[in-house]
Length: 419
Image (tube, rainbow, N blue to C red):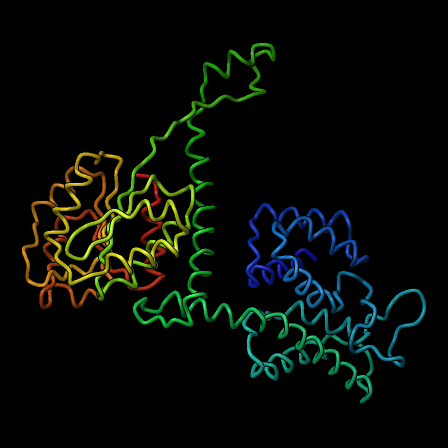
């Protein structure tokens, strides 16, 4: 039955419920304690163990109702109203017949992987596979009536699985498409879905970062203090003491090109960064076209999405001049750069044949701990036309293509990694 519960948890994750390994183990313990005979008690117990936010209650209730509506071979008793059981085939006496159609189908289903079942066109294939296993497993006489009941039970089981997986499939497919799509190709109608996806990815990344930092801050075992504190226990280490690591707060300077060719990428980068919340280093934000302007106050006064819109309306004027913009940026942050600082620049490095001011980028690279450049153009176009990407690339610690949310997520994850 543990495998059944694991499949249920996988289904909840498909429906975007954030369930960690610890919560899965809690659910296994709850199920072992409550048993599976009383579905109402099981539902309440699993809900307490797995649902952390009221917004996920409806998805949990829907998944539970659909997932546990079929008989399970470990239960011993099919649920009331299980499809495939007719008055003629219903078991008599104290327990159900081992060849009751619903139980035969449930045993067969446990041997079949329904994970790829996502579309109605797959219904017939999985019905055929399920019936093939069920007929081989059944010991009852192969009468026409029984075969019809078995097929009805199998069809109902496949329909329930399809109803459960098909609900999550369209959204998951849309999210996968959005992650791979070039950000410059997004249409206005897709913006809301992209914002929701970014917030979801940011929450996941923030949770992973907090967990990693907690482990890192625990430090090393303090043997001296551990031995002294455990003298009353005859030196047996009943209580461990750790040397606490106090990390220095890093600083992040984000500078985004918001000229016409890059503005859309800047929007989603800034939204992603500011969705990370407290795990993000202390951040100052700048935007530029032909001069650099700090917009940190806009993000302090307004929500991230609103602040980005205001910055684009106010400062997205003219074509890019990277040399002048680097001079303006260095004038504002040069004195604040330290070895624990990171400078993150988003731009296509198309300088309109102006002076690139390589010397200023070299100063930024020398003074900051990391200089990272995200270029939304395909690498095949670097150094073509008025691009100075190759020149800047030799100076930066990292210079990577970043045209999609998938690439952006990877870049931000690397940014949060400890150095």
